[in-house]
Length: 151
Image (cartoon, rainbow, N blue to C red; front, side, top):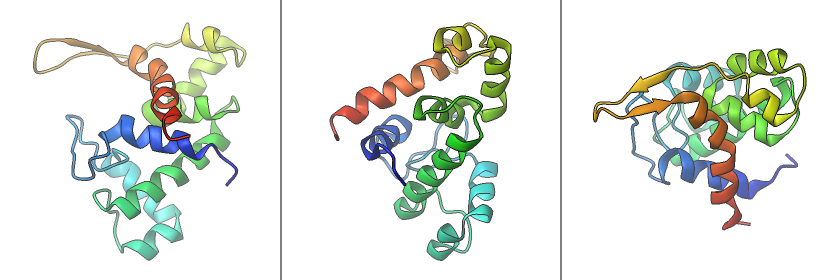
């Protein structure tokens, strides 16, 4: 795959802090922070993952890294706007939501798409608020920043 490999390393760091055994508050697991349904879907879709394990194994670094890259490649092809920036946004917040934002924006202009973000604001256990639009919009930028050190 012709892709900026250093960004995948930045994504792994952003997702899990490079800790293969981590589980997030929302149920994301492993280096790629796969949600259970997404892990099952990508595992069923990709034969190379089944060669590593008979079932989804997000805590296995070999499985998780390969699954992350394969899922990113899939998203690159199904998001209405081309580019890793949009594939990463889809990884973080869902391709359906992102494609709706793109349709509402009527273009692939980043600012126009960002202005169409309509996602939840959730209250965390510590009482702070988490704006899922802000998280999703910042996600590719975080990956790019983290990835630069691996270039």
